[in-house]
Image 1 (tube, one colour):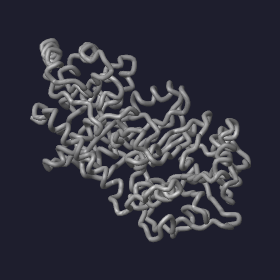
Image 2: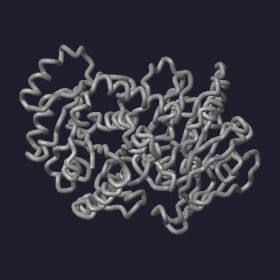
Image 3: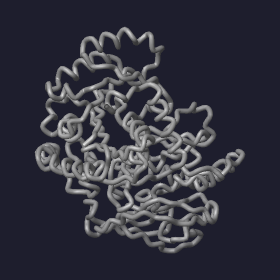
Length: 488
C-alpha cells in the first residue's frame, strides 16, 4: 500500500500538525487518504458517529482528509490512570485498567495484532495511509512495545519524515542521535527531515542544514517557521487555538481542572473566541472573579466531588454563585451540581450516597450502563430555536426532584436545565460550544452583565471555522515543505 510515516525526535516535535496538513494537501489532489496512529496517550478524545472513542488528533486529521473519523485510525487510545497504570480503549471500546508492565506485555504481540488488523482494513478501503508516530522514534527501551513508530513504517515499507522542534534547542544533535539509534533498515526508510518552529531568517539556519545533509545523507525537505496557526504552548492537540494577547480579552471563563477531567475539546471553540480568556483552575487554587465557571466532564464524578469538598473548592463555587456568578456543568460536571449522587453498585469504585453541590434540585444514580450517542436538538435558552449538534457520553440517570425555577435547556428535557435567571446551566451534551450561534448567545449574556456590546450571533459553527484553520495550516506547510520526494 502507498504510505507515508511521520515520526519525531521528541514528543511535541510537530508530528500531528504536519500529518494534518499533509492529509489536507493530498486530499486536494484527489487522493483517498486516511490518517493512522497505532497507539496514542491522552484524555482528549473524540466520539465517532457509532459511539467509538478515539484520539481527537486523528479525528482532526480525518476531517482534514475529508472523511469521517473511525476508530481504526487510532485503534489503541491509552488513558493514564495515575503514574503506573493505563486504561486502554481498544478499537473504540474501554477495557480493564492495566499496570504498565501488564500493558507492555500485552502490546508486544496482542496489541501489535490489533494495529496490523486495522492497517490491513484501511489498506483495503483507501488509496494511501498517512501514519503518525508517537513521542521519540528512537526510544530503545520501548522498542519491543512500539505500536506507532518504526514498527509501523517497516510493516508498510513506507518512506518516512523525521520532524525536529528547533525551538527546544539541540535540533542537530537530536536528528543525528535519533538516526544513530535506528537500525540500518529503519534508517533507510527516513527519506527526509523537517525542521519545525524556526523563528529566525532562513539564511541564518542554512549552514546547519548544509552540515546536517552532508552528515546524514538525508535531505532537509522543509523548514517550518513558527506560526500562530501551527504552534501552541500546550501542544499539538491545541492546533486550532490562535494565540491572542490577554489584554484583548473582555470575558473570562474559568474551567475547573478536575483531577479526572475529560473531553478537553469541549472548550476548543471558546479558545478561539478573540474576546474570551479561558483559564484552567486547579481545585487547590482560588477561582478568582471570572464571568463564568465551568465544571467539565469527568471520568469519576464522585471522586472529583470529594476533591472539591476536601480542597474547599465546592464552597467557593457555591459562594461565587450566591454573589451573582454564572455556573455551567457539562456531563459529570452537570451531575456535580445536583443534591445527591448515588453509586449503589460501586461502579466508580466508591459505593455509597454522596451530597452534591446542591445547586440544582436533582439526583443522579451512577449505573453500569454507559450512554454513548450522537445528538441533534433545538435549544430553548439562551436563544430559542437554535439547532445544536453534540454527543452524550456518561454513566448515570439524572432526575429532577422539584423543578422549581428550572426549565429544560433543549427540546429533549433529559439533556439539561437552566434556571430562570440563566445563572445556573447544566447539560449532558458535549460539544455544546461548537454551535457558533449558541456559543455567542451564551457569551452575550456574560457580556451584558459587564455592560459590553453584544457579539453577532450569525457566525459559522466551530466546525466551519476549523475547516478554515486547517486550510490555513495546509497552505503554510505547502509553502515551506517539499513533499515530492515522498510522493514518488
